[in-house]
Length: 119
Length: 111
Image (cartoon, rainbow over all chains, first blue to last red; front, side, top):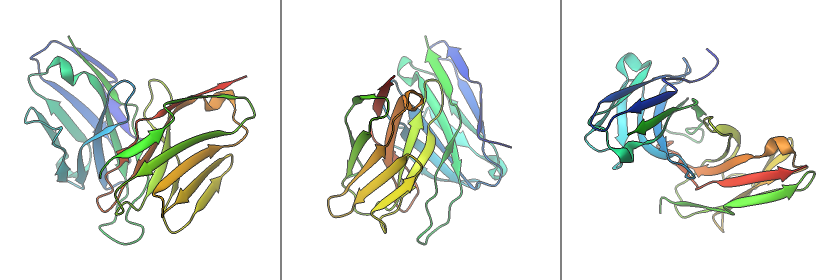
C-alpha cells in the first residue's frame, strides 16, 4: 500500500444520474477527507471521517451528497441527481490524527482524484 | 476568518532563481501550515510544513518562513528548476485538522 487510491479516475455522467466514487486510504491512517477542486482553485473541504465516524460536513455538501466509511477502511462519496455545477475533481486524502495535543495535525496524503464531468 | 489568502496568482522565474510565494491567514487558532505542490492531473503532494513554534523550516531547496505576529508565512524555492513548474498551495489547519487551502500560485520556471 503505497498511497491513496481513488476509483474511477474519470467519470462522465448525464445530468440527473447518480454517481459513486471510491477511496482507499493508506491503511494505517485513521482520518479520511473528501475535497472538491474546480479549475484554478484550491481544494475545498467537503467532509472528513475519523475511523468510521463522520465528524464534520461542509455546508457545500448539499443533501444530494453522502459519504460513508464502513468499518473505518475505504470510503465512498455518492452524488445523487447530479447537476452541471457538480463537475469538478473530487479528491480523497488520508492522514494520521490525534484528538488533541501539540502534534494533533499531520500532513495529508492525497489521491489522484476523480474527475467528474456532468453533461 | 477561515480564509487563507495567497499571492501571487502566477509567477515566472528563471532557472536558478528564487521563487517566493506568500500567504496570510486570519484565524489565530490555526497551528499547522503546510505547502502542497500539484502537477496537472494529479492530487496535491505535501512539500513542507511548519508549526508556529518555529520561525523557519528548511528542507533541501524549500524553506518556509513563518511570522506569527503578522499572521503570514511564505515558501521560498531556492535554485528553481524547470521541474519545479507546478501549482503551489498554502494551507492551514487547527483543532480539527481540516485544511483550508489558498487559491494557488502557478509557477513557471524558464530554462
